[in-house]
Image (cartoon, rainbow, N blue to C red; front, side, top):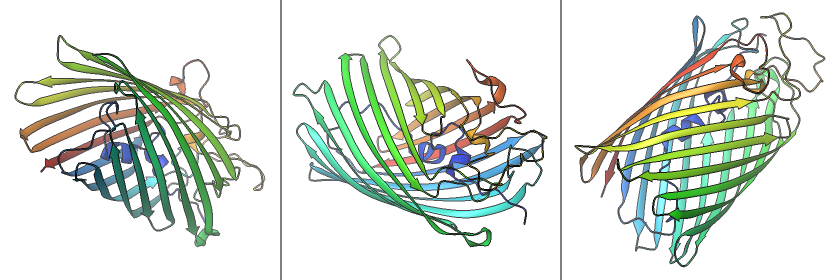
Length: 378
């Protein structure tokens, strides 16, 4: 039978940044005061519309909805929970992002998470669980994290551990409840340098074991273990003259598949009259190809290798460069009610990879994302 590519969340995140979860929970400023308990509860609803495409045709469309609730308890605790549901539909190729062997698909996913946090005078301790369900993929995860601040609150150390246990089940193509386990850890430090400057350095390390291949791609056979490290640096600078804040970040990523990636992000948060805030966003990304990625030989036909060979023709493992432009606008309607909207355009091309060659014969990839949200404080 012809293989139909079933998009994972990574299909929707060419930058490797989890575009759905990142979009539905836009992070705020650096957590310099992470040991301060929230004073008010908040209820948020966000809607995301996502569509990606390649020349002459649309690929994957996503409509996602997320509802989240944060409740402080007795000034020392908080409970956070969210539920996310998204419907995915469209057509995507089996290999090398060519239209040959493309197929129709649709699916529904539901994810839930719950976190409990205890606040201390100089730190926090959080524990949480999460699960995700879709027709062929089940994931259950838990984590624990904490922070500790110096007496003057200018330095905050943070750490976390987590694990997910997943199962992939596509019996029609011979994948029967295959397990995958991911363990990760995080260490970070946040430092207030001046009254207008905060910096943060975070290092994450993850190990994955089990079924790591994509069952919907032609002869996709990847190693059964993966090790990855990411180093993220952030700098927030408040501009006193305008009342705005510049946010710069750089992320370096490396893994045992031999992928090396660089991501640079710049944002500028500018308050405006009548309780408006506007935030332009620019993001640049570049990565090398996995050691077992196969370039096309005679597009659109696949490269033929023995089925048992470690190999993949997944465009996400190729060498490419990408750029994203976006803008977020928020408006405080009342002291208790905030609405926001965000639009982002992303484009990926093999020829855009700086300081190295991109993978040949890969069609450009484009994506549009629109997010709308409303938050009520009480």
